[in-house]
Amino acid sequence: MKRIVRIRKVDLPGERKVGTAICKIKGVNFMMSNAILNALNINKEAIIGELPDKIIDKLKKAINDPSSLNIPQWLFNRLADVTTGSDRHLTGTDIPLTVREDVKRLKDTQSLKGYRHAAGLKVRGQRTKAHPRQGLAVGVVTKKKAAKMMKKDGVKPIGAKKKEGAKKKPVDAKKKPAGGKKE
Image 1 (cartoon, rainbow, N blue to C red):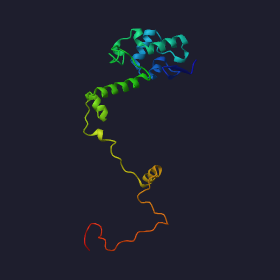
Image 2: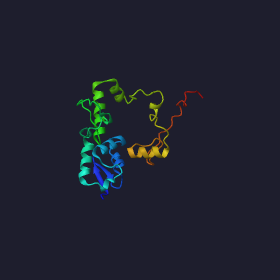
Image 3: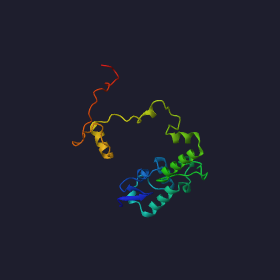
Image 4: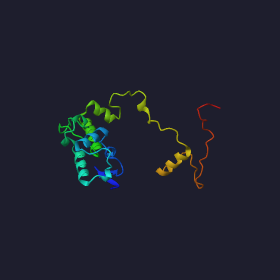
């Protein structure tokens, strides 16, 4: 029995059942795993570490290209892809890369969604009155934390003591008091 089975750059624990183990791969949910296992005639209750290498290779190919198994297109996560026009199913690291490309394309075409992405606003019609304001305020910083941050940045704190060798400036007696009031 193998302790770890590696599919799509994901380490799957060898003691898990096949149906739940391949759900650990990003882009493969419960429905897709059932469809793949049914198409390959693999028992969902079988332990993935005990499967022979030939079946694991078939499983890898099926996860990479589920359209070859005649799985219905409505299970795919990328219908009518913008670049190719075909139905695709993305798994693993392809998902965040494709999403990033889509957002970049929206920004470049200057669509409404692209403008909202660029401005950091909600894109899908959510309310923007209250919740987008969260995280904008700096909040309360204690004196210790402020001094630590300033020391790290090389900035002198506001209330820092002067060195002993520094001379104090003489106070001018004729100056007006603070607030501009006469005495």
